[in-house]
Length: 227
Image (cartoon, one colour):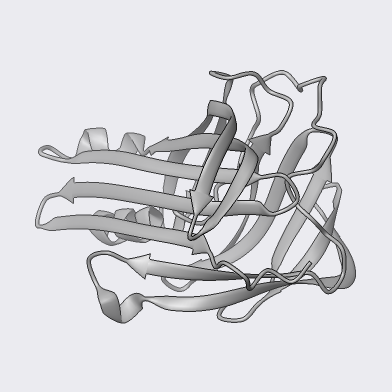
């Protein structure tokens, strides 16, 4: 049971995380936001699974004209061509996403504070929570502003003012499983107006009789962003 739970959590957290923000709120938000919520804007992405090419796919994220309320915030609704809707909120310099995914038979909705555009380099914030997938499992997600004001080329397009965020997470339950380990190497790149332009994620999870080696890449596709 524990092995199944850990595998589900590892797969799920490449997308979202939730919990309590322990860092002070930045006071210098960027002049141009790192996400557009204008209705009709759309983003096309290419997802690559470096271990299993059968999982490779393109998908489109489209901003609708609708909002919804959750977790005390107003979230803007985006449709996802290959999955459930996604929801985004910008509060000052803080960027949140609210997404739903399935862990086995359990549907879980998580709120993630994924970016602070006014935070200085090396600023980090933890999000701690407990998720119930048959048994309660605690997870800590840490985001860190690794670099700012980058110039980065994705495909053949060059973006400026890019923020590089490094994400790690830990599962204390692993300490109760001898021979277990978890290493993560997860990087997000956000550009003004466009939002996420690239995500590289490597996750290695080892528990008794189970090894997960996950290496994925998501990039915005040149010429297919409609705004």
